[in-house]
Structure formats: C-alpha cells, structure tokens
Length: 183
Image 1: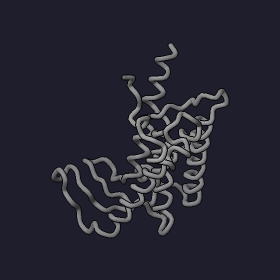
Image 2: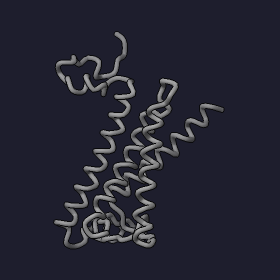
Image 3: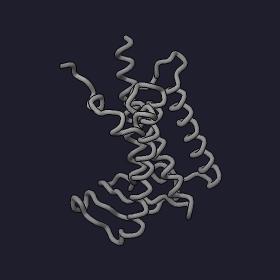
C-alpha cells in the first residue's frame, strides 16, 4: 500500500469546506490558508492570553520559584521595553508589519508557479504576523502591551512576543537550510 498523507483517506463530504478551499492541496490557495490559519491562531492565542492575564492575574505566580513565573507588567515601549517617541513607534510598528505581510504573500504567490516558501516558512510568517497584530491590538486601548511571562533577568514578555521570536528563528533556520541545499 502506498504511503499517503493522512487526509487523503478522507472523503470530500466529511470535510467539504477544507476540500473546496484547497486547504489539503498544494495549490496557492491552500498555501495561503496555512498562512492565514497560523496568523489567526497566533493572534487569537496572544490576544486571549493578554485579556485573561489583565482580568485574573493579581499577583505573581511562581512556576520555578523566583526564576520563572507569571507576573503582570505593562510595557509602553516596543521590543524589550525600548521606547521611541509615541507617533514614531506606531508608524514603525505598522510599516514593519506591512513589509512582513507583503514578503509573506509575495513568497507564497511566486510567479514560476511553485511557491518559494515552504510550510515552515508559511508557519514562521504566520507567527510573526499574528504576534505583531496581537501586540497592536493589545496596545490600542491604553497604549500599553500586557507582558506577563517572566524568566530570570530577561525582560518580561507575552505570547505575541514568543510567536514573533519563534517565527523569526524558524525563518533563520529555513534560510540556513535553503542555503545548504543550494551549495
């Protein structure tokens, strides 16, 4: 018996939406769906965790004693508390997200008919976009981002920051792996 992806044994009537949208195909639409699903999941998890922490985290919860835990903190700056003039900060964040979105979409919609972006690359861009959008949404009401994950002396961060960082690391790994293949 031929090895097939798990979803090929499913019939189209079991998951009609996923089949008609091309989610299980190698089409450009299916590739865009993966990017969209990861972006949405990262956005949802990041915004939901920030809302829950703002509502319920009253005092620090130790996970590994004083080394790691959950501690509510609000950050008016950008990465790791870096502060820029308020208008400049929002403009730079917006420009960065637009550039990442353009690169991600153009990479999926390659002219040659074959995507230049692997599944790992689409996941990476989805994490970066979702995390970036979540931090913008978190900032809208009061100009502050909710941070709550504390590890050692590293600046406190949140799920959105983690998504952005993991996405950037995945892109780096993907870049190095692609370079090794071409040499």
